[in-house]
Structure formats: structure tokens, C-alpha cells
Image (cartoon, rainbow, N blue to C red):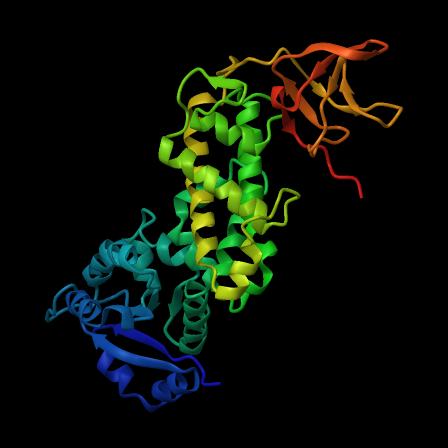
Length: 385
């Protein structure tokens, strides 16, 4: 495998002597560092950066040189001052690491006393002349990191990662999910990459319950209906989620229930679809929805983190856990027997009951009967193995 070549632009008033030096050239060749171009002033450096654009991997800059060529630059640092003024400008377009290579460190300390050199100091990118090989090794290390998927996703999705800090384990799951986009053959492991996105949204829902935006013990499916304004036994007192995002959440749940091997009916065959197409474009859509939901959650957190009033209303006459009757013949909760024919109801589910009727065959204190259409499973109990 061919070694990576690192393209650098070198700015120094004395750069001609360096670039013609046999020892310097030999070290650069051994380290696979290519002198793409050079500049004698910071103005010339700007021109070279604009000329080469994406070809540039890193910049070496002197400390004692001028913004424009002058006759006496023994103590001039206007070139470095100019470089410091445009580093951020170029890094907004694309991350290019700048390295300070100087023989006048004491002069720089005298002139820059207000933290101007922190960009170099905080990143260990200041090298005294004579430590050329060490600088080249650091250049390679930093360029490799900047080109790594980890660095790229962290900088491309800064706002989303900032929002993820509000949700337990969301940062790790988001990073894991985004990194799948860079893995060859990741379509082989559909469950592994749909699950991180699902976990993020599950925890967003939990956080919304804690802020009283949603009722407690609510499943994601019912939460999705509630945000969309659909009939689910609950109503929001105000619109919390924009309609396009609410519709996206509904789509998200259908795909991730299927793709993550949820117990619900896998009618969409997401797993098979991803394997047949051998791509993860569907997953990209799911992950982007999860990131939009993270940003939405941050907005909700900013508005309602201290909220102590319910922002929802309920039509339920009763809510509680469901138990299997000791006889093993039916499910009940309190005085209510629940219709379980053609239902996936199971012991430990949390249900909300809309209405009931007198039971035809009361069993002790269980006197009311609830048809399947009159209760909603709000929270699923763990499936027993």
C-alpha cells in the first residue's frame, strides 16, 4: 500500500534556503511530506492558499517575517500577525492545520503577550528551528486525525453533538451511528446501525416525559401519535413539534421497529431490503431524523426544563399495570378485565383505559370488562424469554 503524501505550503522570508537545502529535502522525502508551494510573505501565503485550495494539507509559517516584502525584517512579526488573522477564515472552508516554525521564540514572547499564540500553543504546534523532523511527524499526525471520520463527523455535526449532550449515551450512539456511514459493508449489520438511532429517540421521549411534555409510561408509538395530533387518548395543550418533524418521527418508528428486530410485525422487511440493495441510504434518512429530533429536544429543554405543569390532557378513566389472572385465563388491572383476543397484550404492560362496561362474568372484585378498542398499551413490559 502506498504511503500517504502530505502536501504543505511553507511561509518564511528565508524559505528559499530551506527548500534548496539537501538535508531538509531528504528529511521531507523520508517523511513523505511534499513541499507543494512556498511563500516569502503572508500576503503571498494567502495567494498560494487560494491557488491550491483543497490540495493543501498543512501550512508551516515563520514567526519573524513580514506581511509584504520589506528591506529590514529582522524584528518584523507583521506576517505572523496577518496569518493569525486569517487562520479561522481558511478553517471555515476546510480544516488546515498551521504550524509555527521559528528561531525567534523569545522575540515572539515579547511581542505577543495577550494570548495571540494560543492557537499554536494549545495544539502543540510551535517548533523551534532545528526540530524539523519532529514538526513533520506532528504535521502527519494532525493531518491524519483531521482526515479521520471521527474528526470529520464531530465538526460537520457540531450542533447535533452539542444537543446530544442532553441525552444519556446519545453522544456515543450518535457517533457510532455516523461512523457506520464510513464503514465498508456496514449494510451487513442492519440491526447494529438502526439500534443506535432508535436508542437516541427512546431517550428523547423519556426526557419529554420528565419535563411533563408527555404523559409518563408512554410508548414511542403513542408519543408519535400525540405529537401528530392523532386520537390516542391524550391531547397536547399546545403544539410542541412541527408537523413535518412529527411526520418524520412516524416514519422513523416504522423503519426502526422493523430494522432493529422489534417484536412488532416486521412487515416492511427492512433488513432484507438493506441486504438486497447493499447500501445504507435508508439508514442515512433515519439518522438525519434522529439528529433533527436531538435539535428539537434541545429547544424543548431550553423552554421547559423547569416546567412543573402538565402540557397534556388525558381521556383515560384508568391507568395501571396489567397482570395475568392466577387462573391463567385472562388479563386484568384493578377491577377491569381486558379483552386479549388477537392482542399482543402481556403481563406487566402499562395500559390506559378509555371506557368499560359491566362484566358478564365478574370474578371477585374484577367487575368491569374492557374491549380491545377501548384500551391502549402505553408502555410495553419486557418480553420474558
